[in-house]
Length: 287
Image (tube, rainbow, N blue to C red; front, side):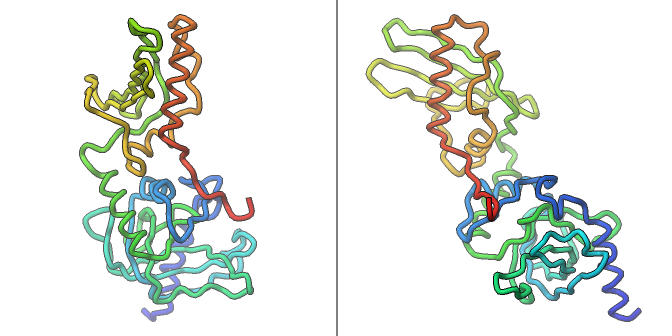
């Protein structure tokens, strides 16, 4: 079979795999962010968590796709069929073919020139395509990233955290909250129970002492460890909390408490959010 026929067949399979997630940010598996040259933990964690397949690769060739097969390409973009040589598999099944193909919608430069990717080293955040081992599907608009040592190190670290046997659970909301006043004015303890996807226990524990700043910790079991503390920033546990917790304690969480105790629980919860910091993503270009 001629080489051109083989390539066209592969391209057809890749085009069949396109879903709105490839080109429509609102329907993608992750926010449509423009990731800066110095990537943030949050933005790369979004990609790693959403991608069953994370690949370090070098682009071997790009073929421009035109006509009806590129009818839904966003303005200011061009569509390519890309073939890339796999250098390393960061996340995914035990093995993938040495060369993979995928569809990429790439932005045109400010001077109107089409981007050139041949021989570029990239990190790909993708999923496999049923029926073709050599084809993958990028999970969203920012799922091809230019390789840098910093990005590679961060991606591998996050993938390791996500795949670890003791990875923190996905936080889905806030359950009940309790506050118990101490024997002295300004003394007390608040406990906020979180809900998780797999029903594993997680709680926030805030301790107040007169004349001291509140201390808080997160517990990942039924037993609260007095020596535990807050999660370090830019870790998966920090991400699970900072990017999932609502900005205020739901009223139902404190409905069983006396009004004064409910007010302290709300204040303690706000303190935890302030200590965590914002889960910030770079806004889309032009926003």
